[in-house]
Amino acid sequence: QVQLVQSGDEVKKPGASVKVSCKASGYSFTSYGITWVRQAPGQGLEWMGWISTYDDNMNYGQNLQGRLTMTTDTSTTTAYMELRSLTSDDTAVYYCARDAPGATFDHWGQGTLVTVST
Amino acid sequence: QSALTQPPSASGSPGQSVTISCTGTSSDVGGYNYVSWYQQHPGEAPKLMMYDVSKRPSGVPDRFSGSKSGNTASLTVSGLQAEDEADYYCNSFAGTYNVFGSGTKVTVL
Image 1 (cartoon, rainbow over the protein chains, first blue to last red):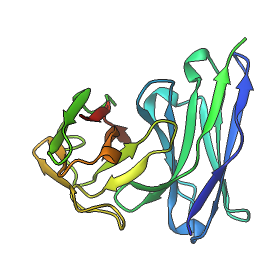
Image 2 (image 1 turned 180 degrees about the horizontal axis):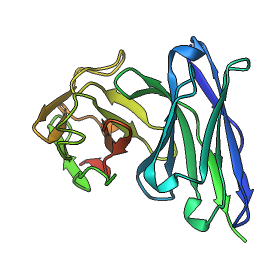
Image 3 (image 1 turned 120 degrees about the horizontal axis):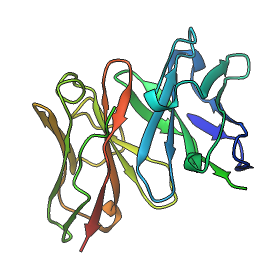
């Protein structure tokens, strides 16, 4: 069965960086892209960006450009999301999701809580 | 990249129907038939409930249906059940990015 398993929760200080991993299994990794979504406490979902697992083509959300890097490792079927220069506004649960045709997010990771605090 | 507009809340009694709207622009909802809907229970990851405007994934009850007219998409839940109480988010493809709706909390009275 399709599974996306994310790395554990993180606590970071302002100005630091965080890297979250998303290990995929149960399907052909390079046949689907990976989308990253975040959700601040008590808030809605925010699309962060998408990366092709086939050719590393990517699109990032406008407000995260310059701080966000998405990568993939096809040898380990793992996707990564790195966010730099963290502020308290980046405190959120970060999700990876399999991106099916039509920009449909059909399977989700369990979420990784990133807390930015002094 | 502004969020799509959804009503903050909707409610209905068991067995009734509730419809959630999702309003965007001609650059997103109105420009593509790539609108999807997600259900999220507290503390859980979102779950895909509808895609390509009106297609249901395997395992989603046929009580859920989707439609679109112009720049507004809608999700209807018929025959409301207690387990339908959750937050619902729409999402639309917009060319080089995607955008979520603001979210609607559905309460089963």
